[in-house]
Image (cartoon, rainbow, N blue to C red; front, side, top):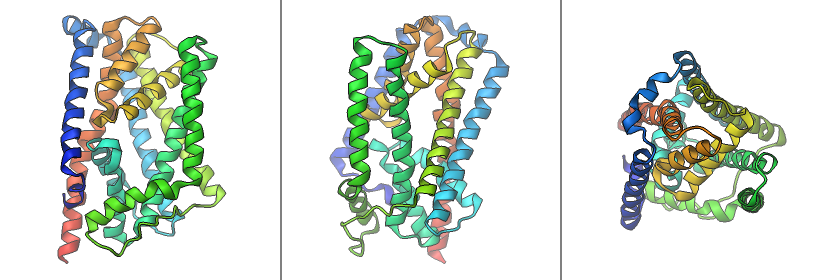
Length: 319
């Protein structure tokens, strides 16, 4: 776990405080939803839709693996499918247990240790993954204006437009923002061979389009998974509303900087579902089931796979 020793001690304490706060928020949301006294609500979930939702969740993971393998090839590095799976699934664990998903840098570290890929290329690959996911989430959030026109949606529209503008600037001035990632990896490597003058290694238009499509399709499976869980509990909201609510809850979780977005994502999504007429107990049940078969399941699988990836790197180092 050498590479995880990158957070200054104050930030480690902040991480603990944020995670504890998230758990407290989740506990509060659960206690105020009447779900504790209505446990039988969970048994009303149609197993057919649960299985479909699980398949959608696995399809989302598979697309992320495909995306990483494609980006690796784009950066002139052919990798085995098993390694693409290991690095992608391991990152589910590392990214979600660290503030700001800084654990995503494990991917660049793994590619450097396993394939000798330079760290700037590895970080650039991560950039394209995260950049498109965030852009797509904000675009879907923007669609709230066409479904819910009120003071809240106008504020969300303005905020979303502002952030999309920031993301455009971020892309074209990425070097200014990504130097921090290089500084972190310099600490990990304990080396001065890396330059702080990070330059995003941009890719041609066609790979950009394909990466965007893979990211969009992956998120559509996530939207579909939540929609299937809602249907499974006997309620209906439109697929578009589902995509908007899911996107907003993810954004709220990211803004909170709480690991896993725990508490914030569950609370915001359950409240929005209630606003659409789903009872509180069913709303929190829907959210907990969806999070279990997506985030929490991925976290457990990611932890298991991450142990193999670390063992593999240690073995390679001993050789």
